[in-house]
Structure formats: C-alpha cells, structure tokens
Length: 135
Image 1 (cartoon, rainbow, N blue to C red):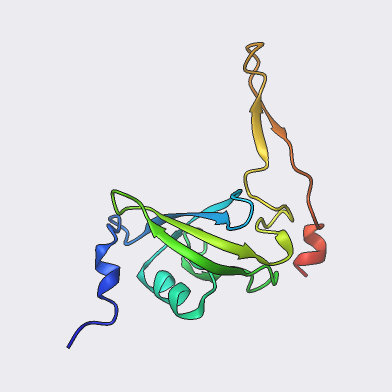
Image 2: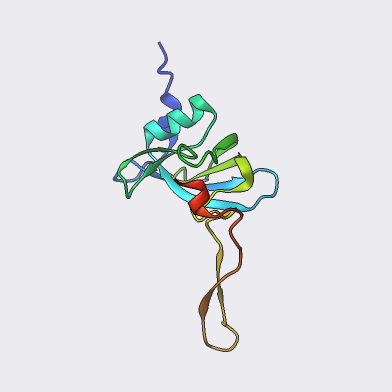
C-alpha cells in the first residue's frame, strides 16, 4: 500500500525539518511574504487549500489569517530545482499579507545607493491599520 504522504519525501528539509517558502500573489506576481513550513504545515496546506506555516518565533503551526482573517487561498505550489524551497501562488484575501497591514511584507527598499548613503525607505503604506486587524 502506498504512503499517501510520500510526496513529502521529495522535499529537502533542513536540519530543523523546515523548508523556506516564498508566497506570491497569483494574479499580480508580487512577492507577499517569506516564511517556513514543516511537514505538518505543508500537509495541512495541501489538505485545507489555505496556507499554513511554521512560526519559528512562536515555535508552532500558524494558519495564515487565523487572527486577521487575511487567509491565503492556494492556487499552486511549486518546488525549486534543488528541491529545498517552495513557492506558493495564492489569492490573498483582502489584499493584506503583512501583520503591519500592508499588501506585502517587503515594503522597505534600500535607497541612496547612487550617492553612497544607503538607507531603508518605506515605500508602501498600510492598506489597513493593524490596530483594526488585531484586537
């Protein structure tokens, strides 16, 4: 009898049992966030059709949107050529992926390179105030 989760064995998990995950908006192509998954998170993602990650800071499974309602509906999951990174293409509910209330977690750009004064510039405003999201 075949193991129904044998597809998980193709992933090259790191020494902590994790794989890095890049999450991308399926429509716009914009990178929304970077996170990690363990076997349970990836299995739950596949079974539920919604993104589930492993929170390294909280050391537990994290269903994206469990508090905010900003769930990520899976459109496609891809494995890279080295089989050690995943790409999730998702529909981001309400267009907010970041806990800061922004569309993307990548809202800071390194500017000032031409004049030799590099500094981080916030380039995307919040879509919604985090105080309204997390109560």
